[in-house]
Image 1 (cartoon, rainbow over the protein chains, first blue to last red):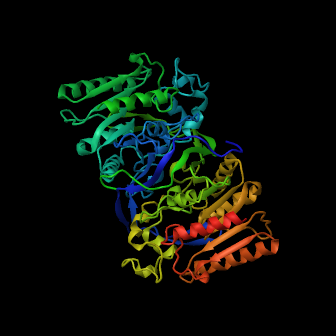
Image 2: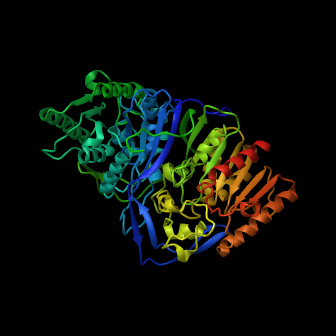
Image 3: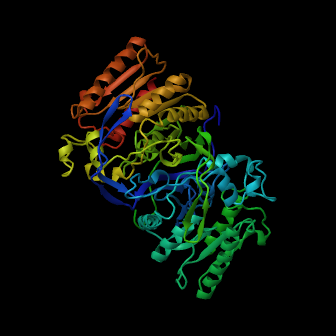
Length: 317
Length: 317
């Protein structure tokens, strides 16, 4: 972009943002501390008082060429924020841009503890410790390559993740408080869907899939369809799912025992939906002849094609 | 927005985002922990490895009706993120929208430790503790009203901050690590300006003013103008400032000794710039007949008028 103004992206009729959900809490009985805020400002800082925590932050975008009323809601996975949908690590348009180009209004969520939603630094409320994903963990968990090949950045073959931009991707990682904030995340996403106020196509990735599924089961009337991209969560046995579900799953599922187990659960979930009479599709991409997708299909070299296929599925339901 | 699609905002030719700056760090020698990531996924979590920390996150927006090549860069104050520029707490367009409507390309920064830039949870790298601003502190520090009138939410008279939306504003607060991350924030903002690649009008609020000023003095060739909205930072004595500076200051400056002191420094800074022969303007709004502005003029009821005045100033330099 050096020397030029930025270019690219889908023309928009407008965009905006809002916070939804969360709760007010009162902190009491903590000692006052002397804090140097800036070189010119220091004062006694009182950590006690009224705080608003566990809200979600949402940005919405409406394309000029809007062809659908149904909104698409994008929910990040664990350790990511809504920024993961904006651009691929190698600078191509992200799924946000792809769904806008398909004519959908799109809402991008930073759920509880992530990005602009903020987080709670009080151990009495969020005990922690928070964790941050290392590059090595991302390499292995996201099925980019074998753990022992991280140092050379030697990927699985075939591999569609843009390897040269792998280190760029980890810049988008933010801390998380595993499990502790899940219930708050479900409540906040529910508040987001209530604020949107019409049934949405909810598309969630990985750990976001668990949050999205729980939220959707709590308020199925707000869900036009649920798209789960390698979700880490599943309904409890016997749960009735009253909306169409599409699962999207990449390649190299034999890379680790975790992925073998999750694959079996994707299939069992799909079969259970069919038994319920619920519209269910499960795209194991490699079985459809599309080889080499990682856990991050929204960043892989065929990201636009996969978004296009999901948009096609959404139009048909 | 219930039942309707979102509306509003300035039509855009495009938008996008990027990360800039930061550094890779290697964590070693920390114990492995068993962590339950989701109901279905638990494993030995290794906190050691390669991480990318201290980057900035930037969203850029280009209006369809673009009338200027010079970009405007918006930098939040302490405990806020770039979201503070998007909308006022009572739902009016924020300065981001105002400057887009004026025809400027606008870059919105989440600097180090804030929002989508992420933060570093390793005490060996960022000792902490982080702090979060309480509603009471915001009430008093932002000159909404006297500390003893917080409970009744009784504001100063006149007061332009949208009092009914005060509690909405604190949803946008995020933790910060006072002073510890300042140097990293300066480096990251420098990387943002380098990536933008052309002289920008840099507009910063409060603690962001200190970061912006330091960054601008390090690379004046990247600065077309600096707009400081109640900055908490000033140049060292004798520092040469090679770009025009506008300071914007609200009302009720006698509310606390801190603000009395800062007011004197704003005047001294402006006088020093004039002595240097540098273009300097300092708008003490109350002295210009505009009464009742808080520390948050981008949220006050005359926010659009102030943005318009700043845009007018930018056009004239």
